[in-house]
Amino acid sequence: MESNYQDRIPNNVSLGTNRTLQRALEHWQPEFLNWWHGLGPSDFNASEVYLRTATSVDTKGWATFGYVRMPEYRWGIFLADPEEDRRVGFGDSVGQLVWQQVPGEHRSTLRRLIVTQGDTEPASVEQQRLLGHTAPSLYDLRNLFQVNVEEGRHLWAMVYLLHAYFGRDGREEAEELLERHSGDADKPRILSTFNEPISDWLSFYMFTYFTDRDGKFQLKSLAESSFDPLSRTCHFMLTEEAHHMFVGDTGIGRVIKRTVEVMKELGTDDPEALRKAGVVDLPTIQKYLNFWFSSSLDLFGGDSSSNAASYFANGLKGRPDEIKYEDHVEANSSYSLDLPDGRGGVRQEQIPMRNAINEVVRESYVRDCEKGLARWNRHLEAAGYPQRMTLPSTRFRRTVGSWANAPTRPDGTPVTYEEFAARQDEWLPTAADRAFVHSLMHGVFERGKMAGWIAPPERGINAQSIDFEYVRFN
Ligand SMILES: [Fe+2]
Ligand SMILES: [Fe+2]
Image 1 (spheres, rainbow, N blue to C red):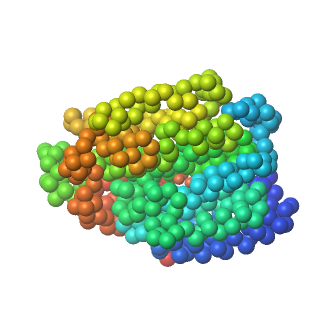
Image 2 (cartoon, rainbow, N blue to C red):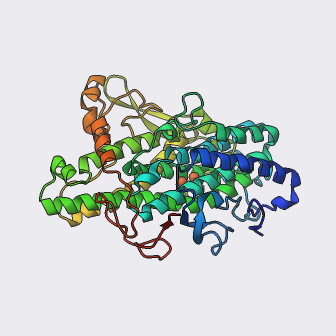
Image 3 (cartoon, rainbow, N blue to C red):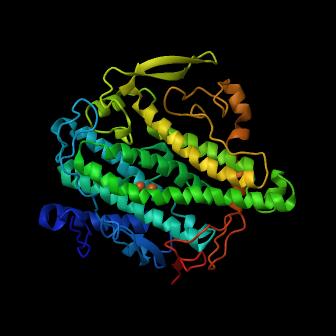
């Protein structure tokens, strides 16, 4: 597909041949830039950042590296190449040709799905807007800004769909994507995780590991959609998303690695001693992990969901990697859910498989999350320590689904409200834990230098050295 990188809005969707659409998007563009200046990264907009920019979707063009001032980043519209003769992959219409336009009967549902996805993209930029000041290195500062500009591009991706396929109400939704703001009392972002402030880098790494990974699974589910433009948009977004999770994965790993180094040096795992030495003790890292994992699990929705069933039946939103499943219709199959029995125990219930799609997707997400744990624990293993980081049970601290308001221990054992209240400080970050983590946050802006609470990365970006000048301050 041809890309027009020279256009005011870079694109590979032949925007120049549709004047009405082009004008509408050119009208939205200054509003987007306004939003970026007001709610994007709080400073550094004059700095030159070593960023990758997508200039096309082929392997050569999708990651072009160079110094860019963020407001001059070329936010473009790029869809993966169409797949010839693509067919509906799941649900009641399996095998029919996919749709190039929105079917009238699915219009409002598809719009809602696109808006919900679109809302998370600028939300995370807003959540992270102050982090630049406390970056532990230039390498990390650059990674933060890479994530931020790409979330901006993901917003563009969803806004393009709204403008191109949903007429006037699509344009109105696009405006509202810039009007809702993370944490705003009157107009908050749609999903609650995206209203949690991210004011320290440990949270940022947790967010990019756990919450961007939810993004990956949502995008993979939407990439299965029978609405082909949505599918193609999400396919390309996934290539960018991989780096966001890499930032979280390696970030958490580097924090653990540094803590283990200091544990060895001092010959102790005493949290107080480690904190005095300026690193994050393992129990605190575990609490952050418990918090962000449980919060991200909620994003998949209820474990038994009639909405999920109808998205699946109608071919709107599927399961990631649908091809791996044997049955693409799931008309008569069932799924066994573990539910709280209301008396402190667990009972099982069979529900139709289609109603359990959220749970099926959540399970594959959990398996994906476990891979990072194995990597992080290698630092502990290699140093000969018996401690291990663990993922809490999917029942723990849920606010959505059957386990909402059913308190459990991190291992998933149901407990009374009293026990939960009495012990939650052992399981989740306390105000004092957060204050300690905050106390470590100081910007380190010298080439090659790292904050003391985090190990250097194993390698730089795009084959550059670790002490490369990833950000030039002007
Ligand atoms: Fe994104
Ligand atoms: Fe992301």
